[in-house]
Length: 640
Image (cartoon, rainbow, N blue to C red; front, side):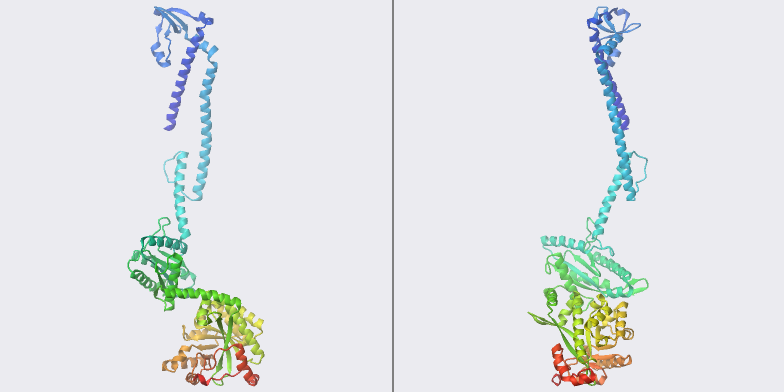
């Protein structure tokens, strides 16, 4: 429709220009004829012999002169006197115009008509080529993004480009939204990730500060999830995490806590922080019990059975709660305080929640202080080793020494292993410290072995962290080679829980070490997941009964019966049984009566330095050591 309108407008304009040109040319032609050189073309006619056609022709050409017609010619009237007309032929007027006055004008006219048409045609070709190029490029983009245009009647190229650009614009907007979600979304569970969650916390805490309201954060850590991964594989564990995320989403909806981001369409008050850690944010606490109610609901949801295929999984959760502004005033610290409260919940029994208190913050500061001090102590070699003898019940001959690490802080004095060893394990500093302990223990035992104590072993504790990160067989054998200690002079003590969850590779390493002569002991037997299958299937040579059973056995008959059963079990399975924590003679006598092989405790000896062991044991037992390859360490009467 637009093209037709333009065409009509161009035709009308052309004829108007032509009309103007004719009028101007006709006037110029008359002026030229009026010149004396052309007076011979003038004629005189009687008005009765011509017909006046002014009305039709003047209306068309807007001429100032009258036009008349005889039988043969058209005449332009130059002068009228009564019935006499002075005229000139119209043909002569145009001939005079063409010959003398308007050739340049005609050329200009034709050029004026031709040039716009030429320019327009060239512009149309150029625009058409540009549109074709844009259309092809647009088609390529549509093909790349696999976008199909809506079906409809065939349209012009420009219309098609317009529709395509509209569809591309929609796709780009959706792609931006999807990209934002992908950046801030946990890939497995679909929840907000740690980064998006912390950004959300920052904005919400700012709002809380401005409005003077309280907010709370729940730090949720699954209990028993590692066992699920170890037992059934990571794909199984991933499915558990997905179900946990769904249950937590239900909790926040039920408690009216949902807050979906406007730009990324993602739930922001629930996040997976990493691994098996989740967090829920409560953006307004009008009642101090609200966070507690949410925590209780979370525990109930997590404790319900997880059904995966034909298997039923049971796990739990420990939850830490931190409140703004009571616990902390910025996102990272608030999350950290909730994490501290969660660890307190795990320490206090798991499957429960704890609200952060300043006392917990003191413990955290103590943790980081000791961690940094331990690093400095390692660099300055401030750790030392002590050695506690384990003796045979029958003759008090030394069966082996247990190597114990000690830390004498330059400011605080002695810091107990019960305080710094867990920190070392949490931070993986136990890897460096444990390597030093094994080397120093083997080096010391090699010296005593060369001094004649060739029937005594050195016992070194190995943590679960070391089992997980170090190739055990290569590490132990390399250390023995460097220190010159025979493998038969080494005993490794591993806690029961670590052995139960040990991988097949670790079990193979332990079996290979036993083939070389290294003995393996279960430490703290009875305090973990005691199982007969542990003794039957794992590479174990020694059982060390935890001090708890020894303390209770002299006052509780049931514990005495348990000790008796363990002693019989050890004999049946050809395992050596050691009683830890024997401090008084009555305990020693009970152990002896039950037929337990060895004892360890303050009644026999406290942990001693290598110098004291050399002075008290080796120098005082030279003849006995020369004959038996071991020393004697009798119970101290003063400990009765």
